[in-house]
Image (cartoon, rainbow, N blue to C red; front, side, top):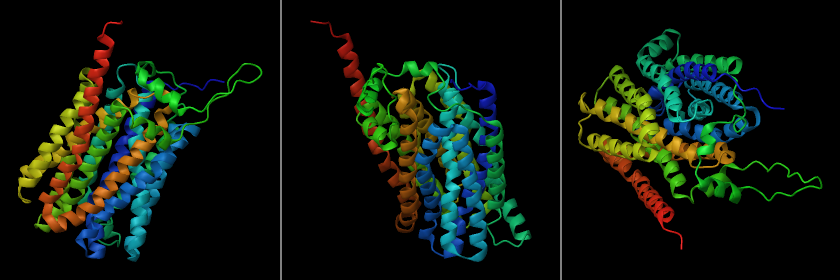
Length: 443
């Protein structure tokens, strides 16, 4: 029996509204998470563990959510992720109120499921997109996060005041807003969003995957045994890490994976230490909120333009543009004084824009460079790898900040981009060799 195909416009609208709510949920809490941990522990180096716990939580649930999407549909996976994030916000509030620090990190880990679900929503957008508009549909869903994500940090001071009025400790109130936003996201997705199981909706994009995708599928798929009636049974589902291992052997797929992983790692490592860096130099929480909001505008505000560019000039070129922007942001971060309210917001805005180019360009290239049957498990594995790398970056960034300052954090960010550049050169050479082989006259 074929699965009912939902109306593309309705599904995309629900995804857009949901991303707005999820943006509020993620940004409200994450803007003060590092400050909250520093306040509770009194150790600056531990501040990075707040973001690390959240990103690690996102990494842990990325593959289970992908498996749930294959088995039950994207909408079930998304609702589960947002419900876990709402639970995490409640745990953070309870832990901070009781003063039990380990429970704060557990809550932040569950909180990270909201980020994992939001990232999975970008792939859901491509599944309801018309042929040739995959990147633009993805970018529209990411763009919807802009309003919520910008509002979240700007509401930090208000949330703090509300929390204090309710008798909560300082910096805990913003997690109230996060919990409510994620609860609404869960209800919205669970009741209104219906997407077919990935792979059941025929899209024109699937037919555009290059020939190398078929080779990947042949390598990954188990041997088929034909029964007495001549029918071959369905292949066993491909595991996430099996798909990942095969994908990294192909230059284009590896370039796509590293674009996602390196861009996110650089963004998280620099962003999470910016509030600590600013407050250590006497800047207020309100100014921190403004800078983080500018950063999030850079991440999501220009995403429709980035998506249009991907569809027009191709994913690899947009990834290269992203590398250039991230490099510029890191250089400004190395040179700018902490209290320079022109250069610091500029650096964070460029950091977000470079991330957008890497994520949208890399995600689109990842989707079109592999065979449809391995797409979802590979997406889950890539998101897990991305968040694991970012978790390590967030944890180490606190140590680097304490030892070498904010300039040191940005120097490390530049080093993270090196593997991406190398992979880009390899992918370019492989593409040129393939073109030359096709043009060579047959003997």
